[in-house]
Image 1 (spheres, rainbow, N blue to C red):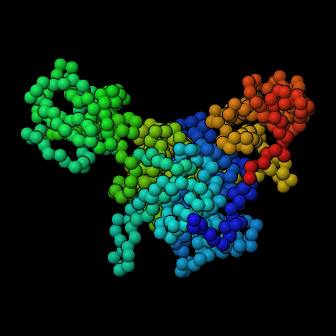
Image 2 (cartoon, helix red, strand yellow):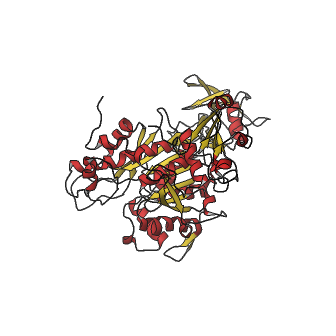
Image 3 (tube, helix red, strand yellow):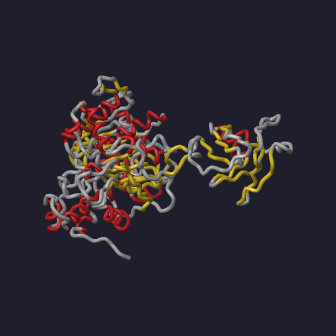
Length: 563
């Protein structure tokens, strides 16, 4: 099978493992509490720092918990200036990553450098995805072929599909060359198979092929319960063969019976096979049936669980927006001149459509964007929540300090709280808030010891990640719960995980708080099953530990990420 190769590939294959875990330092002055008592309570996060370092810092918190990832990485057109400081111990990587991206011509080194930048980031992003999660990546012709190859062959993500987005409505009048008005959004997932991505609603006016009408009868909009199992008298319905094993009838004139139900035992229309039970359930959950009465064909069912929704396809409609729309949108929010904002940002409606598609059935999910730029993804999440009452949360990472402070955070703050547009009109806020953080010091010092600045809550996230490969459960990971006086972090696959660190048992003496002793066993929350205990030292013999079903792991020596 063909494989993708490039200069520096061997050096970056394991580079994501060598990136140190770092602490996150909240910056209150740049945070926005929103409706919450504390900015951290919002569940939303904006991190300023190199996204490779930031992703590694976020991994112990959010591994395996993100439903939707959207990234808009550099397209590598040759006209960009982007710098990602990956200090990899390789002459080739230092050479390729140390050069400025060429602006002239399709040089091979530019593609090598882009691949070296993307590979470790995709490897980390994959670890954030839930099993049912989806990753969307915006890209154009310059690297779309490399992106698909590296995502599938090297990183192991499965290709779901390619969505076309109309980035501009008109081509240039000054060229006779091929005009490119569209870009791509590649959809990827962790596992093979169908991935549900919900598109727009199927409405009453949907352009289905028209069937022949009888006696001038028009389409009717009726609730599902009117499609029933009661047979009407002759002269009202004439039985007819609808094909494909289904039975249908032709409506000659509108009619009802005593119980107010129309008739059919099983009705088939396209992908819909409806029995009366199914229809009654749809009605009970708020569903509506659109009926084409001329041939009694079920036009669409719009329910509360995704019925009557199309799958996501191309994004070519005017409502989605273009690059020009996105720039105008950003300039209005920030109250600045149009020519002073990003010219290639994405419109909020584009990202909102993707977020809705991936989280239609999970409105309390996490969305991650590690190339945050102007903060469109956060805007889109807040906008979608406002529309459907969801509680989705976002995590953004922006490398540039000035952009993170003055554009990303400022935009999200304004759309959350409300702002005044260029016409002087007040635009109401969407609600929500966020905590702003900067990258702090590494979790471990140069000798491999736990840094003195590490608190129990921070080490607890890391220990849980080492043991489970997942982020710490939200009930324990919140800033209020993480420092409570319990060494029990949680239970995973019937195995309880404990951490003895920093006097969590209110006894700051070494022997009383961080060392596993016989008296201390009685202080540990009970668990009927195997237990794993992390601590500075163990004063209990190996035979007794085995008898008690306890595995002891010494800090910091057992805090190693599996290769």
